[in-house]
Length: 118
Image (cartoon, rainbow, N blue to C red; front, side, top):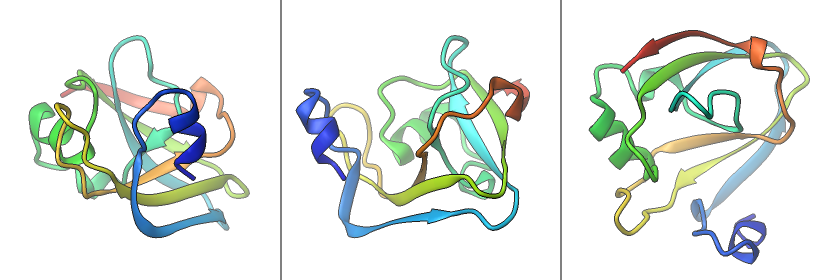
């Protein structure tokens, strides 16, 4: 699963070998941290994974390239394909290690709601 990212010259986003793909059986609400310009994108996490953390702590835990400014709830509908795995450490970005969820299809921006500052 890392090969397409490496082929683009990016760092591999997943660590370890336990990566799974699945289709949601019911709507699930995830969290997405982001800047003003990149709200409706594919990478998400469970809300409880970021509750109580500062933006800097979130960056480290999820090995993000930038410190996130905002958090939104993502209302992912039943039938959506998702990939899940542990975040790979990224030199200069963070240690990773948390579980991340990648949308395998684009969702409308209207499903990214309740945006607030971190």
